Image (cartoon, helix red, strand yellow):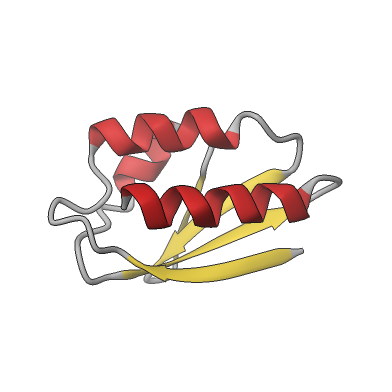
Length: 85
């Protein structure tokens, strides 16, 4: 299992457009990918779960990948977050 923490810099946090793109990115991998914030966690392959976290600018999220392609998944998710969120 691999994970990283990221503090959101987007003024709107994780809103609909980047959440949709994040889901697309996550679905490219076979492993399970989870985003957690304040004790709540969401499947990164489900947009409504991600939106339910209500992650705002300045808040820290933890992204966890667990499975056969977790290394590639965690690298791609971290890159996506830095570029879009």
